[in-house]
Image (cartoon, rainbow, N blue to C red; front, side, top):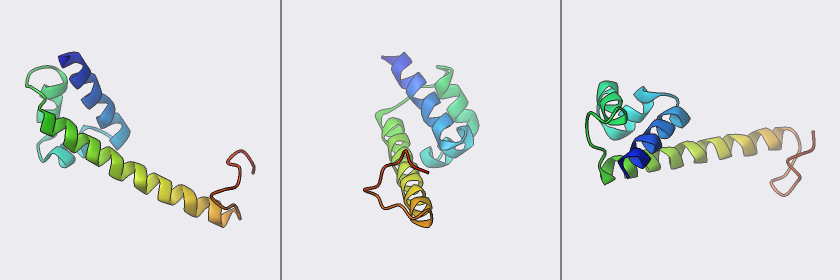
Length: 84
């Protein structure tokens, strides 16, 4: 179970753009994130929930920008995403 938490936090850091961004979301230092991922410190449920919230915010920002790009390209959300 601890490995799931460590790998999950590591993946969250990568998806957010680095351990610094994840540290901001968890209100801690990048060094603390390093220790958590390397099993030097425990990873709490709060850590995981804060990381999940940061990922959801990032996903929403990415989706919003993707919709803007499609609008500029003349596509609507219902249009196929495979066309140019």
